[in-house]
Length: 301
Length: 275
Image 1 (cartoon, helix red, strand yellow):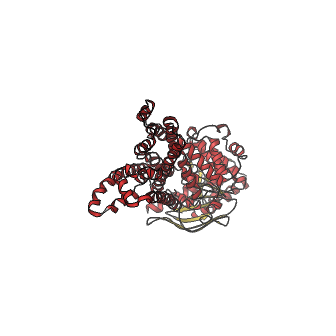
Image 2 (cartoon, chains in turn red, cyan):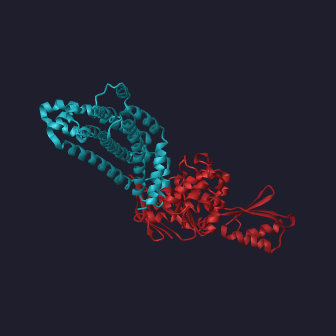
Image 3 (cartoon, chains in turn purple, red):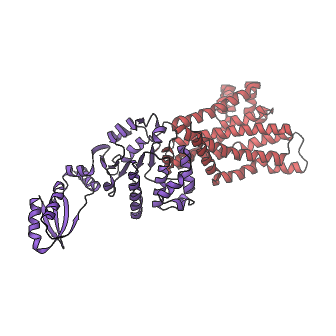
């Protein structure tokens, strides 16, 4: 477990982190959400003991400040910028990481294969695309098989293809039981997170699983239906009875806005009545975009 | 201590340093300075007396010591701040290594790379150009040792600067200014003689002790059995004040410079926000 207790970090008089406490249980993927300047990266730098801070951070019970080396040996860290040595090749970088971590080089080939970088092992870092640099960053973090992975804005510097590749790799790592702590100010990682922490202006404002947070926020769901003509009136009655807040026509679709807790009941009732529902789309709410909208609104007010 | 990690950082630093264009250019210039072509011509023409070695050493020290800091000051002053700017320091320090191990690996790598240049310059000069006897090699070796210590002192100063600086360009600028200050201070040393007329001869001593280039320059005749007075008026003053113990004081002062700045680098780096 990663345990962050009352961590504060000041730059001059400005608090980058203000008494943040957070627990990341083993085997979960916790996503830290927040706008730029919220303190996400500072928190990660504190966990990695790259900056001085007040408070306590325990990595599996090990104090990250007093036993920084031991704590870091349990963490694979992928920084935001993927800053690597341009003049080293992929393999040279992997060997350097293995030596720094005090592990043998036997696992390097397997790890490079996992992230799809084995064919590029002789390429210099300066020749790699942003997506490849990201994958190399992940490979280096995985050397030594650390139980924790910390990914700072892993999708911010890569293109769409890179994001898909990253999500695939992350899925595999979560299947292996790794505990992952990642940060983002973009949408796209929320659906892969089992826990979400929301930060704003150096403080933790909410923690929980994404669905719980969404229902707490009372963000309504929208479902899109194509209903056969004879059954459309009855379908609308069922939806209203299930708590539909708004029903409107959008081209060939009927868009229905519902409270999140009514969404499944409404769909279930439609199925039970055996109505001619030809197609159905449930709009997935992205926890990250909903929260960021909320934080932006809060800031504006 | 994780010796494998320190060795990995040392090797990486060494390889990076010897690929630097500055180091390669400096090596060529330093070789030319050390070989001293006019002396070589005189030697081949048979115009040099048999005891020319002391002349050579005085000349070598006078010509090369003021330029020696131009190797390690610019290189050392950028080594940490550059990594901080580019973000590679964050990558390195996210590995299970201590800050002491990291800075030790970097210091050793830089020290060996820059020392190799100094050794190459003086070594080739001694072997190729001067054809000295075995006793002569001993004197050249002592001069070389002093040059290496001076190089290490400058590296210590540069690394301290690098850990303190926020920007590579400012670190480099300050490093060049420090070189200018020390080489100018050599002249100030001579100027101090003027002050001694009013304040007594001890006024000149701090000028010497606060300038590692001067310390090294006056240490060479002190340790090679040469005449301290051959180094000009300040040398004459040191000989007058300290007599035979001048080299002990000069050696101790140079050692203090080295130890102080290496320790200061370690002290600052272990307490720094690295990202």
